[in-house]
Length: 211
Image 1 (cartoon, one colour):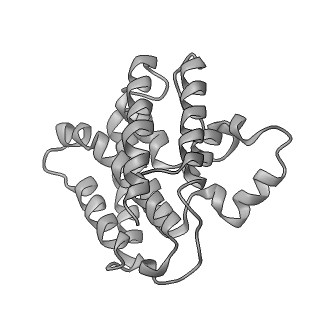
Image 2 (spheres, one colour):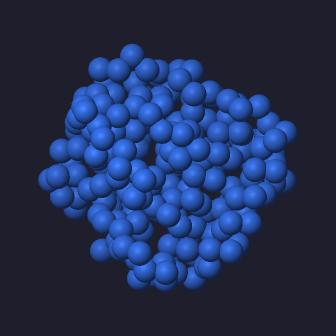
Image 3 (cartoon, helix red, strand yellow):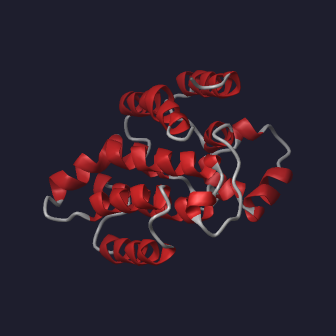
């Protein structure tokens, strides 16, 4: 059962989503949700890392699974997203080193040079890259550089927009939602579907993935 603080930030994000013309959950609310998943530590062995990072890794994996069918439809013989999920699962339980993760990111970057920047397949690939980065380094706003950005904000953190940091540093949910709605900010209806799933299913499952 998820704790009351997490429930509260979920409902705050839901209210903001409904009131937004794009039906989008922006970075500030996603950060507050991910913060309630728990802290991070700097152990080199992933199996010893804090449950917060493990939950956030699991959340990235769920976002990829949500849109992986879009990749499979376009490239039925290319298993890169499935391989990413498998690697994240192994990494999640501490049975994979960073080396194969980094090489996998390189394969995505090479493949993405042949794709347009805002189509679903490109965005699925970008979500995979984000998930691999977060598995190793955690969400950007949890890093030292990200914490400095938060300290300098002169407005509430929940008002932090995705455009305030480099798009390559955003979490997988950003690109996954873009893929789900066939292009970033392309369909408020599909955006509402994705983020409702994120709040009602993905976040609770991620929290419950670690006891």
